[in-house]
Length: 276
Length: 276
DNA sequence: ACATTAATGGAATAAATATTCCATTCGTGC
DNA sequence: GCACGAATGGAATATTTATTCCATTAATGT
Image (cartoon, rainbow over all chains, first blue to last red; front, side, top):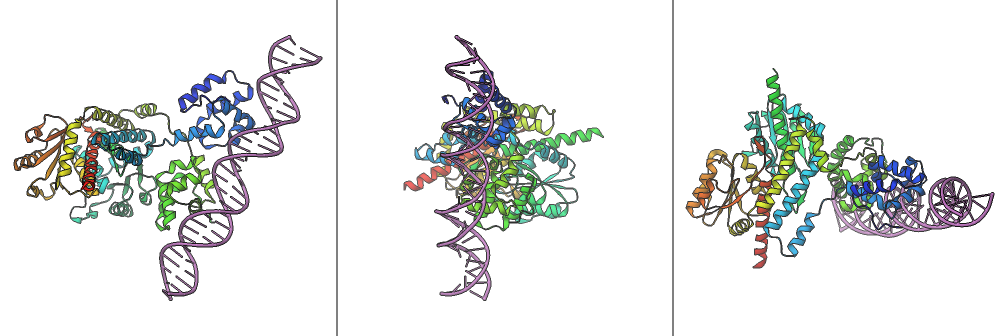
């Protein structure tokens, strides 16, 4: 069975599908049509499900897979699962290789970070939860004061947010932990907290968010997993997954999201001010 | 096993995960962490894949599923497969969608920043002066102490550099201007200063760099134009041009350069330590 | 209308995968 | 240091799912 040309990408798959579906016998064409209409289900369905969906026998569906150039259904499904799970390069081992070959030159490292940043940004564009983002903007635009908190590697993001707010004349304070003063009582009614934290989640950030939540304040969270410890604070969760290079990440996606959030809040406030 | 409360939505799932992951024994917590970080893979993976990903035995992963309230892995996976919707058209079309939502809607702004970030990164890769970068790494690797300074929008970069150095056990201090103490006398013989500043260049940063230069200390500068005021300090000048969105920029390129610099210094030091 | 080839359905088989069970280890309180 | 229960690893088993095979049916050309 000629699998000399098994498609390796969605484009190739679609191309091939269009190409051969013309010349197919009845049942196989049913498969083609159903698949064209339900491409996204392939990754998470069984042959049985798909074949009944297409109104054919499992064996017919198998033949269809083979006509498409795959060795069988599993082979075809593998392609879809891989493209879905968009597997990120494993930079940890890639770095090892660089090191092994002696090429951990600054330029090689820079190239890795640039590439990682590019991937993270692309990923951000396709996975961000627009609804939550919009809600967060509205909530922040209505807040009399915004409190920003983030430590360790989240601190650059927190400080950039503060800078942006300050530049747009928006009342915001950065809880930076200087002098361990923890001015949590500065959080007053209707104020909103933006908490930024990544695994391993820093306790101070979680504590502040929890405190705010307990006081009845809204919390916007920027984190790397939708089910981190912030979940318990009922936060508006904006999750960004960033590609790591070894033990570090370039923060490109996180900072982009943060600045877009800040500028959106600024724009929203302008609109509100002009409106009245 | 009590599946009296099997989550039926991602929301519920995340909530439950955050709730119980605290009180879990070691292996099960590994599962929880891995799942939190890779929620999207559940729908398209097998127990074997996920459990090795989490570094546990399949049986441990099964127990995790049951703790989450499902009768087993298949049950849990079913939930994810049902709520699965293909969310990955390619980057270009997705960006179009984001943009199409209206001018200063959060998503349109996000799209701008993402695109700006990508352009900046691309630009960085082709314009950075590798020779200077290499020299800067050597100089920094040899420094007994590294002083980092950067204010306003350069501050996030400065703080991230400090974080990276600290994580790699490299002696570094962040001159953050707290209390206006300006501990310039902390800069001792052979120490190196990393000064980060963008137009309009902040005076404090320039002053510190000039002071260090006058004392005979080397200066590494990260800036947005090769001919800025840092020129006068004979600094090793790493210039990055970042694409602006309105009055803001995403800092992707600058941060990538900075982290690559820091990690390179770390790698270099490791090599030197092993060498002797 | 017949012979020949292609297409199909369905059940049998093979392979992959989930799940359970139990022996062993680890941690904890006495 | 011992006894107890909880947690864990790993292999044995059950279940699901893919795949093959072949008898049957439909299509095609002469």
